[in-house]
Image (cartoon, rainbow, N blue to C red; front, side, top):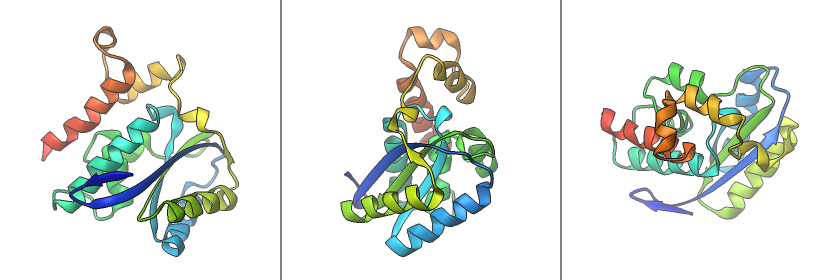
Length: 179
């Protein structure tokens, strides 16, 4: 559960294995599920996500921005991509962390008012997108570190100061200074 200027929201993060062929069709299915269940969901390239905490952090920042009228995207699901990517420009945000054709590992973030709504949405997402849940795809692995460093422009020397997840979370948080 997240608390802030936005009140209380339940957040669910899951990983899945997928065969992404049609990004638009997947996003439309996601949107239709959200509309039925009254949630907001977004799907990301899991190779570019620095653990579950990365998406939870982005969700809190996006919700805070919307609640305080400092958001820069027209919808919460677009705002989530911007915050997860650490960039304001929507096209760049999707390029950085968004779903793309050929993607095999996805991270799915769902926000709702109740735990039941989030759970229902995530169950429907798995079924309707025909993806297999595998939360390990979100975990940071040695193979993922160079991808994250390139995605978030993190120099190698900074890894001597902090671990990759902390560095990515810092890049995401710095977006709030770009207003």
